[in-house]
Image (cartoon, rainbow, N blue to C red; front, side, top):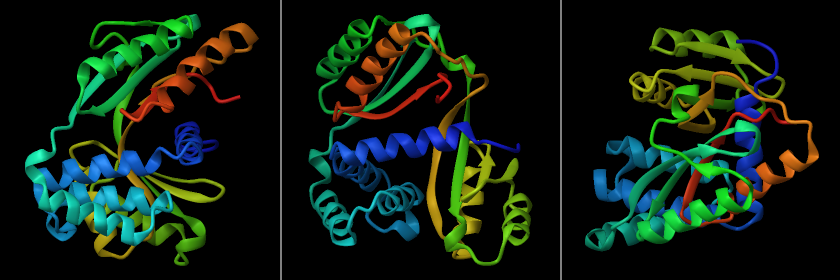
Length: 243
């Protein structure tokens, strides 16, 4: 991989928008609750929780807020009833969209997701209708300003521990893994005290579609804006080229 990293920039744009809308605390809180329920409150023994903490810090969630969320979840595990659901569909001009949700009310969430697609001129499809257009990958980003040893040491460490690819961008280093190897690569870099900007399993489009028509673009942005404003929505992936 080389040159402009579309998926990294899309991710950064999404996180910036989420934070601006004030929903990132809700996203992180729910992810902490689920992670603690599944693996306990100690991030040293719970890789999912450790990864949520990385995400929280990358989005400027205060440490005391993270700690409170962990303690609350640990003391109230029985009440955590959030469930993951994934929706797939098409925006105008056939733009592929995947929506990941974490909710305590699936009927409400399904209705809201359908409304977003409908109001933007899109439609919900059947499971698998667009996911084949994406590759599920582990993606670890390292801010160049936070890593002083340069690209070579980081690349060797990542590749030696199972990473598929390594890429140097203008302001970051990117480590790409298969979903199966993600935990091993994450642990190796974390044990080496690599400062993560973000670390997660994500969906990367195999190809991108450029939209130049203003009406089509308006419809797609309507869908994305409504989805990203919904507290039940954890992530939105699409194959529209960022313009």
